[in-house]
Image 1 (tube, rainbow over the protein chains, first blue to last red):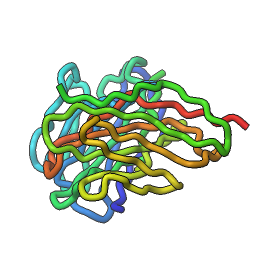
Image 2: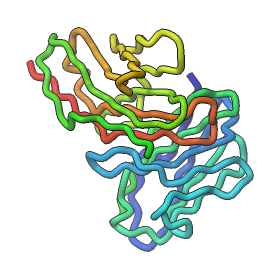
Image 3: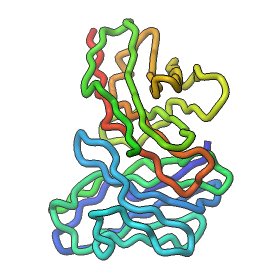
Length: 115
Length: 115
């Protein structure tokens, strides 16, 4: 299957700082990318959907000014957590889907810890 | 409303015994169905998927799942569980032929394997 690379796998940042998470499709063009958040022992909750070259569509309750999503190319989407707070600590997972794909492929996830 | 229900939060199975994890879905459109496995702190690994055709699908690691449209179910099975199968299992549903729509995940079932 297609490969989606997510970086970093783990990051620790101080409260008030911003952190950027990258999601890359390595061997296909990702027309759509999805960002999920997973709390401990919980399921994956969709945060936003981004289409290349367009603004992301955020799910209800997700602050778009706090979770900045950029999908500037067909192989890269980034999620920037701005002014991070300890409650933003979570596991963030991206997935990517190409126009001809019947399924989305998942990155390895990023464990964010805000101290 | 679209949803995925995994009725069992936690299941413990003896090594070598058979396993069945339940999944029921409610979806308005023709669904694609998936089972993913997640080890602690890791991303998602696709076990198997159903798009169309034979309702019994084979996956990796000896897993299989059966799609029953009349029961809106997609239960995961394995005839003989290994200790390495201990993990979190997620059932997910997505729309057929709609690349821009994210998956809906169940809450997950934690599988423990006893010796």
